[in-house]
Image (cartoon, rainbow, N blue to C red; front, side):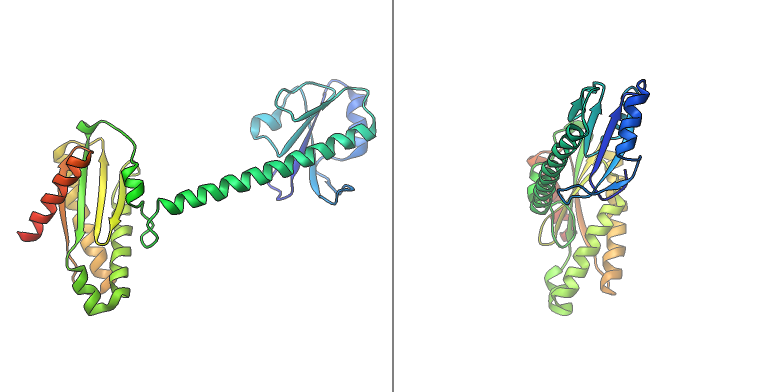
Length: 255
């Protein structure tokens, strides 16, 4: 099942030894075959009664021989001929190819969607992803607003490469300092936010202090020079809470 080749599972009625021997005469379990279509595939034999290939993880294509398996892609009656058998296998190969195309399309769509919702520099979700954040209980949520102090000065003194190192370090430190349930994002420029899940305000304050400490350390190490982060915190999860956290962050810069 780990083979990179397409896999066809032939589900044989375990109660019919003649049927089993006929299929075994065509192939042996796990043998690599090449058909007239020049498409190699793995052909595996399992039992209709157990249906274990369907339970353990359906292969690329399933053929029920001499039995009925509802999840199989094709089935044959007990009196099938060898030609009918290979025609059914040919059909399954076409099913496999179609599924491969569909899977490839889904993967491309998923990749494009991820790119559209990911900040390329830090790998964090971007503003679009933040704006599409899932709903939750605002009474058990809080927003942390983070801003890199003096990023323009850093870019001037250390070049944009230095600024990018700082931003990348901030992104990595933010991600490593929060739980999987929390949502970090880079809104753009030097602005980062974190949506804290299932917290009260005192807990959120403790998390924010730890977050600032870790981000300061990581950013300073990346630049090999002191870097500070200003932070604001507000209870809730809507745009009003985001604005309140932003105001608190700006006040922290003045203090």
